[in-house]
Amino acid sequence: MPNLDLPDSLVQGQQSIRPRHYAACLHKVKLVQHLYNSSVAILQFVHHVTPTMTISSIPEPRRPIVHLNGFPGVGKLTIARSLLKQLPSAKLVHNHLLINPADAVLHRTQPGYQNLRRGIRSSIFSALANEPATFNTTYIFTDFQSDDDLGAAVCAEYLATAEARQAVLVPILLFCDEKTNMERLVSSDRELHSKLTDVDLVTQFRREEDIHRFTGHPNYLELDVSNFTPEEAAKRIFEHIRGVCPEV
Image (cartoon, rainbow, N blue to C red; front, side, top):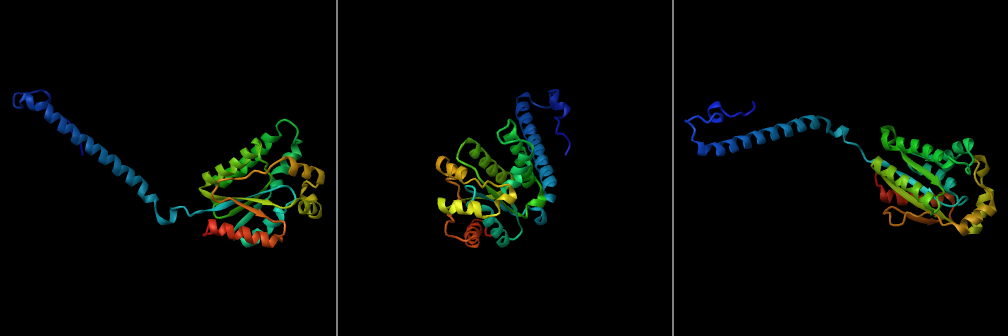
């Protein structure tokens, strides 16, 4: 439709058009022009968007991110490995895969260490949020984050990643009694992954620090694994994940 300009006779105010009708005619013509332009804009938008909104291109639900938090030695990695066998299309990212590269460059007491750790996490999290090849995989992270500012900030990164991924975050706190914790700390293959095996230090952690809790999060689970085998604990976690994400 061409631009609805006024006829010359109306614009020039010729005697054939009574002056008192001029304003009313101008208003009506401009209204029609506005409606026409709006309709064209809507049609152009629909024409642009509709072809891309096919059933095949509507994104499927992205698989969840599972975050297992707990003190060193409670059994997170062993339980995560058992959980990996129960979850279809899942991958395990244990915390020392993210820690050890930073430790190889800087000591954790040196300036820049936490920035380096953050940069490593950022690269991983960016892939989970933006790379379609990751969307059909459930990712299991093991972690030890205390309830201080640093720990809370790291856990907030997991929340932000899940939101950017448009996926569910399943935060789980694993804990056990102190005696069991110390036994597991020295009896597992922790040294193979450069994991902490210092009983005195972990005892200090337990007595002086609190573990971060995703209190109030709808998918949060706290699980006492003192008397569970890794398989039993993994089964409990699997059932919880299925309750949160039935499509898994």
